[in-house]
Image (cartoon, rainbow, N blue to C red; front, side, top):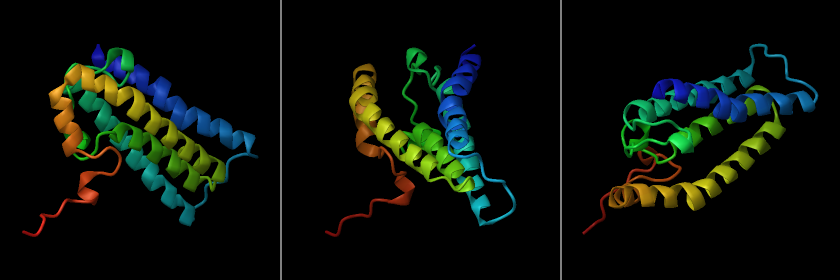
Length: 165
């Protein structure tokens, strides 16, 4: 049942944010660009990586956390495995990656601006709503996680080097 709720949420929320809204924005800006093989096809890389990352994250929430990505049915256990081992917000990064891929693929500055607006919205939500809520729910376990795992840039991109003694 949890997997079904995750699927429904994923279609409704990220599907709208990364699918329906960009499609509507493209329609309002004079239509989508005809996709013929070109350098702009590189946009399919972040798009597909974002979809894959989202599926991985949703699976972790469902099968490890025993909950869904929906705040009203959040995981009961703190998820620190999979992509959450490297970065605290991979699901938001996945959605942003899809929108950035669409912006490249369709040569759209409007979608690039939308991606920037999404990131700002995600950041404010994470800092002022999600993190305080998770602190209350998971206590010291979450505090330790906050200290060890970066919010937006995956740890493997910027490893900490030992200090000289």
